[in-house]
Image 1 (cartoon, rainbow, N blue to C red):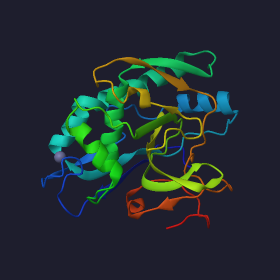
Image 2: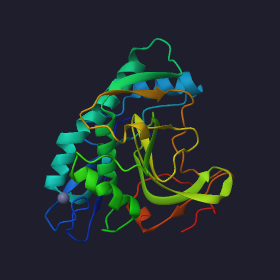
Image 3: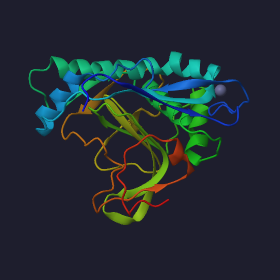
Length: 274
Ligand SMILES: [Zn+2]
């Protein structure tokens, strides 16, 4: 394995010129995941969390993934995301990084003062950008209005779960199904996922809990300019392939067309249904 930093940028493009957010036909611009406001992955953070919280000392700096771009939104919507919301996600990322780096011993959880509703808008905006076709998937139609007009609350049926993600690999997966409760194949849930250092998000429609993850749902009704304390769990640290991994017997994935626009790691398993 090479030790030198090697940058990878994966690029996705639309065939049409319809903006995924405002749905107008316009010149499209590149949306960057992670947003530019977010810090690049830091080896010391990754090593400290994995070695202290999971006992895994095998981490070595490898390939630095420089991001994923989706040429799917117009520059007006792109600027709106960048100016109104992305700074809040960047600030949260920096505060998590700063806390972990400056702590002599890591607690199981801590709290960060931040702008949770602005963070949610940022996550949902990039989620809308992360597909190369214009479609009317329910979650997209629900979240478009509140991205365009920040005086609108995030719909009650939309749930955003989050966890610390001390890994370099960026993973994005849109519109997929998997069991709402792992191991119970009777009830599928519908999910969207964006994971990049140092925090990961799982977005669901009408599913109010998943595997004990912390949720931002109590902040759906806040204004983007409202401050609040958000809990960050450091224990347990989820594996890098959580939750999409289906090598065990408790999970399977149902992938739709948008899986082609995704960047994710799922081992080839017969349980994957296309
Ligand atoms: Zn637009």
